Image (cartoon, rainbow, N blue to C red; front, top):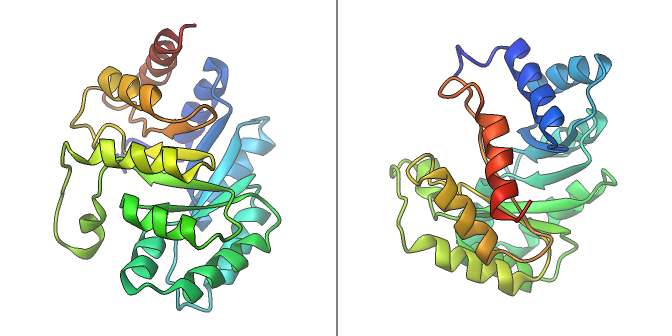
Length: 226
């Protein structure tokens, strides 16, 4: 993927997504993406960008990172799932509230990702000014602490139950278990179980199938009835 997705191919993929009717992309916030998107927008691209803001909850640079995402044109931003995971593990409500407050200073809608339903429900119960949640269908936070891949079939029902309980808009991600689940089956399950107004975030690797963007759009249109 690193070899395939040159800047030119990423911009081409964004343009094909727009042409197919997709109006929003979710991308990590870093200097590479900021530069790429500046080029894309200067060349006439219009797609909206939701920024995933990574970082260390104790880092003084986190505030700068959050501001840079908004300065680079992000229409919304959310905390990387590892940040919520860490705060939940320590029950660090004060620390999590501080991260949310830093994010809110950017003046765009703010969300939080996380890898377990329990972490999202904990954050929701804190009643912080979060505008949306980014909910992993599989509790694979183990990837971030060195315990390897964990994609269990019993995880999606727990994730969608949390999505419905949270009430606020949610973005489901890893709905295909990082390629382990058939795309159509994953889309059908997600759209049958998330709330009206929710959406899903799926990765696209055109190196496997050059028409993946357009095929995904057609598939979703069929599932949702046109």
